[in-house]
Length: 242
Ligand code: URA
Image (cartoon, rainbow, N blue to C red; front, side, top):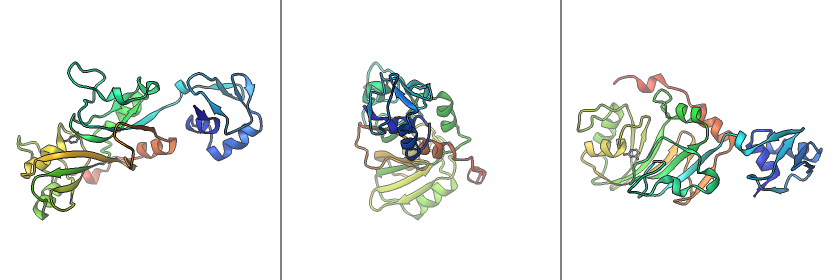
């Protein structure tokens, strides 16, 4: 169940403040009956909401959901051996697709959407959205590690990474910011500096922060948050070979 004004604002119809007047003026119907109360609770799965006679369906609107992925599940729709991230999605989100992936042992911010184009754009290497990871690892990161990350780490198999930011957070802890998503990238970058990772959590993606969302829980992004994610531009400076 959801407030009528919230449902309409998330559908991108108007801002919630303006919607209060729109609803009070009698332009909105729920199951064919005028509903003039912005705080009216509606069943967003089953009720038919219309504005000026036009149905606003949940299926019509773009949804982006953030999951705090726990460790021990794979980013896949199905898996024969392991639990999948889909098991943490409430029933109404089961048809969404993950945007990118996190390793089985990595926790943190993972997005899902029903908009395939959006998913494509957000994971495109050209966009290079910055992702931050909190890592616990052997040893303590020093100025040499910071410089190596800034120049672009060379992984043990010779793969060259783009420039990244390493912020040491004291003994055995660091924050890592990367703009690409190679296989096990952050673990391999720290391993290349002799600092194997024991714990990894993605804490942000672009302007979006995991915050205090508990592990295993989801929350829907607002239209504003989606627009901010989409507005990240390819930054040529960042991608210049060093
Ligand atoms: N880097 C990793 O090593 N693992 C992840 O899941 C994401 C980034």
